[in-house]
Length: 233
Figure 1 (cartoon, rainbow, N blue to C red):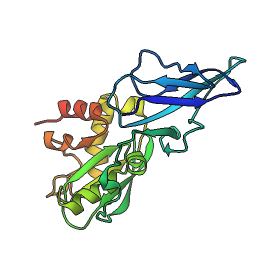
Figure 2: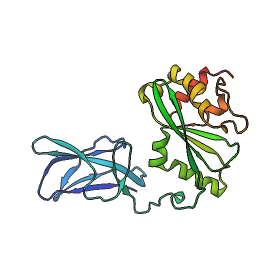
Figure 3: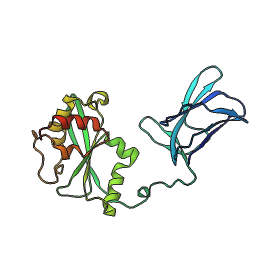
């Protein structure tokens, strides 16, 4: 379990140190203790923690940085974060397992005033089911989405399927159950993706997705639910 964070500061360079993370904590300030700043986390069951530190100097200037005493890093869409592992932490096995080596083909489309280049990861030819991932390039690069898919297919845990990696547009507008984006998603964006969404016939340009289709949406469920409510059954 991750239970303690410590920042060395024997020269008292910092006036305060605070934790920046997604953890819900009543207090995020470190406490001064024998030349260090220490935070003892409550019992949380954490095996792995991504975080940054807010360092406050004696002039009142604050800087958010990775932990200078921890070399382990994780990439992110908004920059690197430090990573702390519990003593018994084991990375997921699929990170090192062999997987199907799919290929990515690009499909270009202009929609809602933007040019979208949609990468479609495919493990093979023929009609296949398709998973649609909003913010797909980030999930593929930073979370290993297509690698995970390849390993699950290689294991036989999942049947072969494609992944459509939708790049982000105007997140605040498009992903907020926008009716305009919902119509563009169903009638333009998905229609532009190669066949395989249904696993049988290609989608026609005017076909709206049904409940089974929208259930395959990943990572941005609000926009998917909004479109599902508007789609004819």
